[in-house]
Image (tube, rainbow, N blue to C red; front, side, top):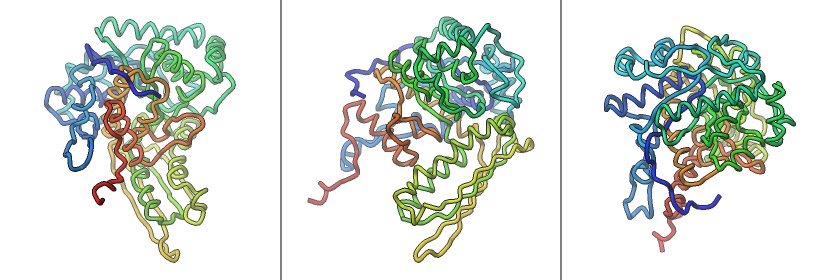
Length: 437
């Protein structure tokens, strides 16, 4: 990846398209509207509240990220999306029950103006949803072409000069890498044959990339994490990233596990369970969809703790993950963790974590940051996998010959160093030896 010679300015409107207009996307849309009207603060958004240190500590240069790099502003955003239900964004947000009445009332007029387009949906991939607002086509390639038409129509009607697509839809049933993913030609043939290996989320990704639209995958589905999509993204000079928004329990793991490893504290086991009552919880009640999510959640500790390098500390970890659908809890997920650690001379200790989180409240600022950073990447001429955005994902995409970096603090350093690199500033290594000559 070469340093950008120049970065095009963010002129005009930036269109945001979300396959899935449920809890995450409507919370994001409403939040952006309240933020740009000065009615709320963008808490949790690195692009809106974060800073980046430049140069030496003695220089005292730490501008806001949105003052340092040429990002689009929340006021530039216009919204659209698809859903398997016909509810407008206000109706959907009301049913999801994430936002309180005050915030819903303040955003009501705005949200009512956002109506979903019919979705490309197949219940074979999300068994616990029965969509009624769905497209029909002679094959999967035809459905992808319909999505491309939707993208062009939205861009024209909204007046957007650029677009970004973020998958905010459901977790699909578990799929492994398949021969039809090897090349773009193979994949297009499989779409025309309506092959079972082609999931609906892949149709959106294909359509987006063919239309020159950057794509972020907020679910653990394969979607763009297949060779055919990466070939298309590379050939069309489009940035992509994923997978699976890092919000609740896994966020805590990527904060705690690096601390254990830094101090060489051993780990015998980590038992995690969740109760969740929103549409995501309902979807994950299906074993196939849960398998997809489980694979994403389980990989985190292995990559952070590196048991192959530290077998006496992390070679025999018992790592269990459970998700339980419990409707009374709604979007307010509760995650319990029992962590069995050991220290000096092997003496055992325990840590208990009870995280009463709001899943969509944690996910919404991630969507905003991904939209703005992917748009920046495209204007900077970056293409293919954007590993520097791993900070936002449970199962980050990376080059085939690499292992993914899960450590939250290394991810943040990589993200900020990428911004420094893009803008021609020195990278920060935190060595600081020059202060002690």
